[in-house]
Length: 257
Image 1 (cartoon, rainbow, N blue to C red):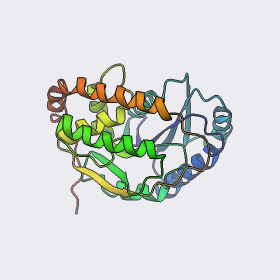
Image 2 (image 1 turned 135 degrees about the vertical axis):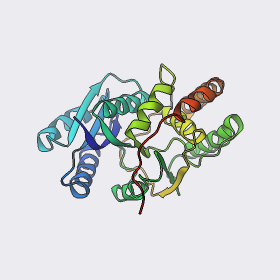
Image 3 (image 1 turned 90 degrees about the horizontal axis):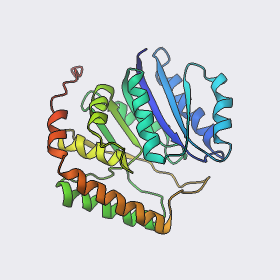
């Protein structure tokens, strides 16, 4: 099997919006790629509410577009990596990752898709971010931590709105620490940036969360932030060899006319 595009979407306790979010993204696939093989892969990360049941109810409606993977709860990062690996196994030419909390709009996907021949790794960034103040502060700390540790500046390294060439993603995953770090998307962004990918600044709309609850708050948020910082420091020593491996990846990008 081979696919032009797979969308990877982790989901945890999103029963209030998951139906609408899935329909929005499947509708985008049907509209933009009516004759191509594409897939929305939703990783249900051990949800305790009706998220899993709702996803299963949607599968018969979209038999050729929606794939649901149920896993024990392992956290957002593990769910993302599992989705990435599954997309690569399916032979996806491109892999797009977003979240299931209805804070992004499908129309912005076109901004990244238009750049697919210019870069193997494309990131959006949230122009105005609607998150709790504590999360905004920690995001800013993370941004400057990456500059301090790696000497690189990335506007929104952990954004769940990214398009990656499938062959390049496969190689990135091979370089990812095992077990996967708490926030693997940050590590993927750092490796891609240091290996020469430069399309990291596409402005994306971020909506205020209307449903569900944020799973990481207050002291737990500070704890995972410290954990991520420690993982990033430890990864610094291994970065050179991993970037070298990435620079050997040759993806045949079509010539842009």
